[in-house]
Length: 79
Image 1 (cartoon, helix red, strand yellow):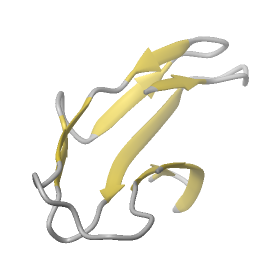
Image 2 (cartoon, rainbow, N blue to C red):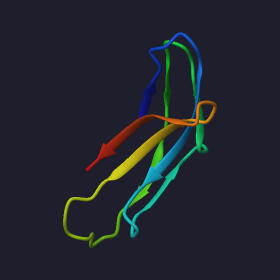
Image 3 (cartoon, one colour):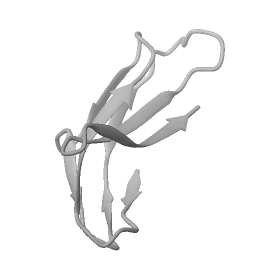
């Protein structure tokens, strides 16, 4: 994923992942990222899906939180 910061200050973000219980998901280089003002940062996610997935519409959710403000900065859903 590419995280873009359109603001004029650096953003320190914590990365959270939500995946179906039989999937394995992790952030490759740690669970936080600093995105420079007017810049971007890459976040790599390792994802393992079972060979025979559960039927239905399933996906991964990436949640970015700003710990200094105790709020959610962005949520991305992939199906």
